[in-house]
Image: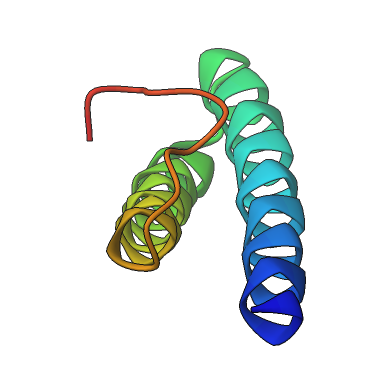
Length: 67
């Protein structure tokens, strides 16, 4: 059980890092960087996949972004 809890904690950290990177990319896209828009989309897709992994392990993510 402790191993699963540790894995969930690691996934939560990864989800948070992906969210931060997506916000950064969104800001860059708002400033006119066209490549950043595609990056933001990919980062959010990866973040949602991590959220699904957290749910699959029996835990709800800290933040539900509707993904």
